[in-house]
Length: 244
Image 1: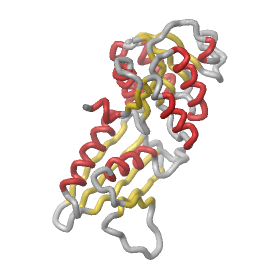
Image 2 (image 1 turned 60 degrees about the vertical axis):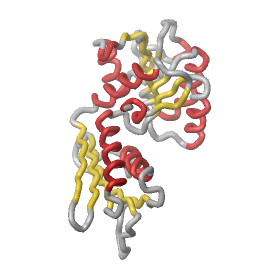
Image 3 (image 1 turned 90 degrees about the vertical axis):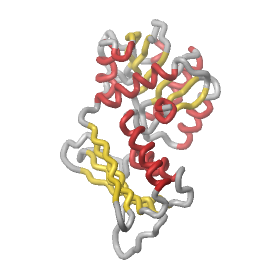
């Protein structure tokens, strides 16, 4: 599996490039692309790449979504979009692209988070009257709250509870509704990422927790996603598909 890493000089791009060059999960390095790099061995644009590849892993920025999708459609190769923060227009581009080529897109590339989401969904279905709260903790430089991962977890739980309402943060005088899925965000220090899901009834509580120790876990997940998607027909895939 020959891999092009797009956004190769960003923090996640560098980790991903290093893992690919080391042959993680059978990956073979094809090329590195980064619009802001001055390195001679890094292409400025995907259109400059001369090497053949089987898949593109994109760790650049959501604003590059159209350019990445256009390139992969032209070359007829799958793409793993590991960036987050896409607006509605960019999400539509991803959906349209998936009608032509295989596209893997997830709000979180961690296999552990995918397992957590699956467990949380099952627990919510089994404990129908339990309150559900999500707490997410990240470093003090993170801009968005709640995290995309916390929203992913809440949306997964909503598949078991379609009537549920996602509530982000609480203040003032307001009573909790039984159908609420609460999300609370904490920003401090250099925490890579902690996500906890509480499923609590009057008699018992289940606590499910995932803690990221190293951002390399996202690169590992992206490479595994690439290995998965290169064998698939056109379509839109995510971490749930990887677990099946």
